[in-house]
Length: 209
Ligand code: SF4
Image (cartoon, rainbow, N blue to C red):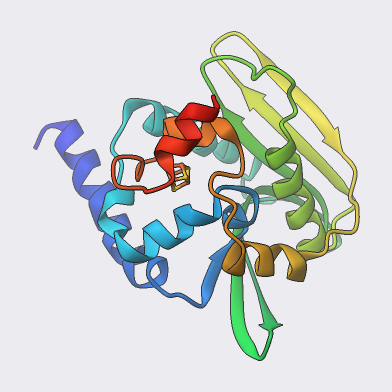
């Protein structure tokens, strides 16, 4: 089998294994809290549309895997892909908030530093971006860590930003994501959205740009 075919099969298998979770209305991802709330609705209704096999996404995964392999070696204080899960009672219903921190450094078994890796063609204007900072702050809060690092990796830049923990009202963010329509949360989101061709709000968002 060609290597691309093998990669494709692996990605498809990973996606299939996650499908049940992706379509569970009681599951909210940390990324849902900082992006367009209608993306979650579209994912619940049209989960297969969120499968993407794109070079840029694969490159992003390779960068993550490389950095994680370098830092989170046996015996190191770093752990890669740390799964986070917290249950919230939202107006009498249970919501399971799930996330995955790229890298966490532990001190005596206690999470100390959380690193969120972002890959891009170029360093975004205005970096660090608000939704990346918020995502990292949510991880910091859920893990109880004191130090956050947002690491941007581009073909010609490797830039890290320190992110301080602040108290985030996660319950309010979940409510906003589940009940309020923030579609899109940022004007540029529709351009990169896998659901844009079927989304009733995409046109409005394009006109705003
Ligand atoms: S196309 Fe735009 S408004 Fe629609 S789900 Fe995607 S990001 Fe949200």
